[in-house]
Length: 300
Ligand code: URA
Image (tube, rainbow, N blue to C red):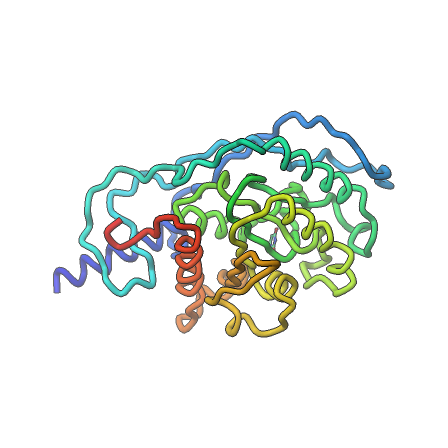
């Protein structure tokens, strides 16, 4: 019985550290700090009709500690075998160093696309945006996360996934023992749909050529499609997320893993019957395996 209680405690501790368990005592998020670097802007497209803040994308990413020195080995939530608590040093911040060899090339190509996005007024989302939202992360990343479209926080800051859904995404990335410097994050549409509605087909048609060009430049080894809008577009499949998630699909030969959108996970968090959180972790373990990266296990 004592052992059972210890095991249960260890699992709850991991879920809390990964941010997948909401507890009042939860500390600050392990979010990487992003420092804007000077941007030599070369505008290759017509100037936007109204002034926008400068582009946020070219970034120097300073990795913050992933986890605030947990005293025990983290326990992935869906694993049936629970560990003995073991004293370990904090995990290394970077699992696989990414060679900066062609950073300039990719970053430069992305900057050109970003300038076109800033100037874009091709659909009805342009007049109501504060600014366009292009991407964050590393252009050399092996792993891309694709969401749906900016919300209010993203519209205000010009960076994707910085609101509550973004904070959960950051926790998922941290639980995978990755940093923002090892992922590239973008959306299907670059302007906020009013009231956070799902983008209309014509808005997606106008905007997705930008995303396709981003992906052609970044050339990720694996794409995670967050939610039905991203999965539906990339896979040209209107199936439900229940059908699509947890299985490998392909976009132009790149493996795609659809999983639940963080906003959905947050929406159902109080439903004791929901398995969304555990399923996201199941999907992320498949992603790590596919990338040949260590999968955090019960025994670390
Ligand atoms: N939801 C998304 O799909 N993208 C964002 O950038 C933020 C919330």
